[in-house]
Every structure is written in C-alpha cells, then in structure tokens.
Length: 290
Image (cartoon, rainbow, N blue to C red; front, side, top):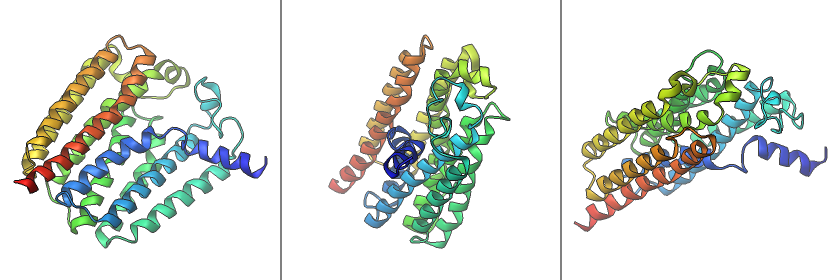
C-alpha cells in the first residue's frame, strides 16, 4: 500500500470523513467553556479544546474499531472499515490510538494541574468504552460519561475549579448522549444481535422510543436547572425550548423504529447541540446589553 492509500486508511479509521461524532462531542465542550467564561472564554483554551475534541474523538473511533476487529468483518455496514478490511493492522491501530492520545495530552499540558488530572479520566473512559458493549447493555452510559469529561475540564481550565453546578451539565449531557446513541444503536440492532454486541436499544426493545423520550425530558429539565444555576438570561431558556421542540421532532422520526429514520434522528442531534450553544452565546450577549 502506497503512502497516500495508507494515509487515507488512517483517516477513515479516525472517521475524518464522518465528522458527526466530533460535533456531538464539541457542542457540550463549547457550552461549558462559554458558561465558565461568562460569555468570553479564553481564545487559546477554545482552540486547545477544539483540537482536543477532534483528537480524542478520532482516538475513540480507532480504539472502537480495534475492539470490534473480530466482529466488524461479519457486519455489512462495518466490513469495509480499514481494520476490518485489512488495510490497517491491529498494531498500527494501537499505535495511532496512542499517538492521538499523546498529542491530546500534550495540549492539556498547556492548561493547568486540575485539568491535567481530569484528563486521565477522559483518556481512561475513551479506552474503556468500546469494550463495555461486550459485557453490559449500557455502553451508551459509558459513552455519555466519556463524552462529558470535557465539561469539568473546560471549567477547570477556564476558572481553575469545577463548581457543583458544572456537574449538572455533565448529568444533562449523559442523558442526551444515551438518548441519541440509543437512536444510533437502533440502526444496528439486527447486526448487534447477530454478533452478540449489547446496547440500550436491545435492552429497551419495543419501549425504545418511550425510554429515549424520558432521557430527552431529563436532559431538558436538567438544562433548565443549569440556566437557573448560572443565572443565564432569557435567550438561553428560549433556546432550551427550541431544543425541546427538536427533541419532539426526533420522536416523530423514530416513531416506527425504521433504520433510516433512526439514523436521521441521530444525525439531527447536531442541530440540537448547536441550538443550545447559540442560546448560551446570546444569553451572555443579552446580559451584557442589559
């Protein structure tokens, strides 16, 4: 394999061609940075965390495919992935994962001690998550926790501390991740059952839509509490109401639990995350205007 072909395989292993996961990890990170910075986060920190999100999401994809290397070749949707197709070796995948994590850790070293300390948990969860689907029906919960570690890290980097209210954002984000990743798991439920992979979609069964709805409600309720805790202005709550409307739209998409519609609902969560970020920015703009 020539250099360009190998580089392409590494890029696809990192899912550079499918950025939705990066966006879903980025939005709550930006929520936290903007709230912690009262609407004016440190510009260098924004760049550090944006780059870190890209690197750690990429690392998560690589270690996920390594964990699934014996299963992906037997699943239609994943059999063409670089590791499953033999374009990349297991040793190369582990090397790439290590390089991505070390590069991300190098960025964290540009912050402070508390952020560095929290980063060990983030890396540990990123490495652990792909293997949880072998042993529990709640891998989405582990993913939600892994995807939420950037929130306390953002507060730690921006303010030097993690206030109690920041953990409300963590709780809300975990609920959101469980909701949207269950939608994603609904797409693969037949293949997962065939290869023995566990998920909340399998656990919830015919009640998937209702239980996803409960997680969406919990997410919206906790995000309202976040706004009250940080004294955010009315544009924030208008944004949360809009996000609630988007969640209702997702319910209509997954109503019949059709694979294509469930995947569409999953992708659409990008707009929900962006809506809340815009609401946070506008809230602080409104506050300054007053």
